[in-house]
Image (cartoon, rainbow, N blue to C red; front, side, top):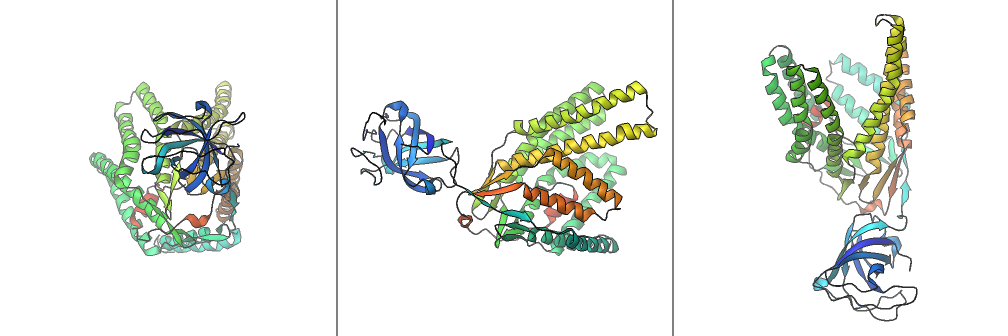
Length: 476
């Protein structure tokens, strides 16, 4: 027998004892029955190597399972999936047996199980993902958007966003089919006007009525979850693939728990203590505490976003931990520090003045380069972590971004934009998007046709534009 999976199985007390169907010198007792998996019900052979072919009622043990039709049963199957063993009283065709298994249970279920290990490689094939945008084509869209936005004092920015999004989506091709952006400019414009009004309230209270600032922060903490939910809902609702839209199922209270309890409230408390206490060691302690909390908050935020994003009838799943995010941020900070320590030592040894040209050359420029490297490291490896641990129905993803390559892109893009007075911005955007698409594989264990239709109900653009206005966008 060549098993396909290893599983932990608990025999239900209400079932009839499993009896050995055959014992041979090279085979431990095995049992043949249907198995109900998340992707369907299949015939299988179950072996209990540690129980010598006999399992008592209510006992939990390790089992090896071989599928009669592995190509179908393994499609989309993942470690951690749960299943049920179903009772039957006849031998299955396709297996060589010396007797008949007796597997009878209440309501047809004899045991519950959980997949602990896939013993064969999952059957997958790749859907080709590519970005076919052109710098020359996008330059025409970009320059028109820029000029009309300036001439209309920002009013055209809503139409500019739609034009830009439609170009990006239509030139992102998955399995020969482009994505679609369905958003309309007028709802976006209304959202931006509300966002601008709220920002004006913040600006006035922070500069002229500072006594009201705590109340403004409190209002922001209350509104932030709503902004995030509406932003994510709007973006998902108006993003489509093969005429089927995405959707976001997060709620205000769920977002309030993740965002405010784990992020905004600690940030506000720490910020106010910074402002009021002005004691160095307390400030240092608060800064360290904030740094330790942040990776776990990002982890919860990413998990919340992915798990509440759905396409058709399939929700996303993300299996990351705060420790994985902490490792990336810690390595990034260590990399930044290791690059700056020699620079600081050189400045102190040679007593270089901060106002001198040597200071700019020897310290400021390397500091920016170190920051670009640390930032690129975070962007690349958090992107890899999130994509590689994300599943969407039968879809799996494999991201292979490189921190060094991303650093090269960021620095060369910045230099090109500065040298061209901004005219090479479209070129920088296009090459970065192509690099990201080239380093993302979409693997499917099954068929994309497994996705069924999704709700096409309208979603307000107000939250989406507030999120963008206050730099609170959520996306993979």
